[in-house]
Length: 71
Image (cartoon, rainbow, N blue to C red; front, side):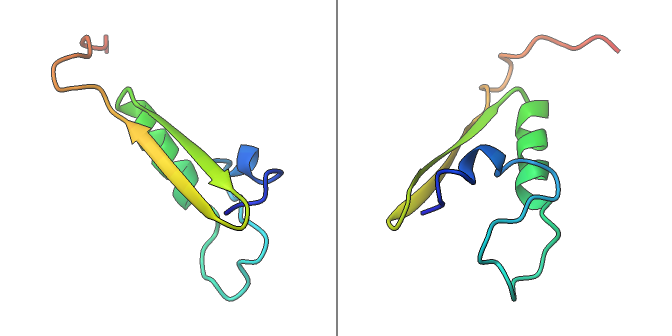
């Protein structure tokens, strides 16, 4: 799991967790994922138990349930 103090910051731009040395990346993956989910009217969140597991969950509205956005 992810340490509790890191969880609130997971979706921030350029945020990388501790202990990721040797893993390539710039910290944009979860930020971009959140933006895409939200742009489609959805929601994403994380539940983590340190030393056990982390679960990322997202929801998207059903097709046709969004009202058309004005240009």
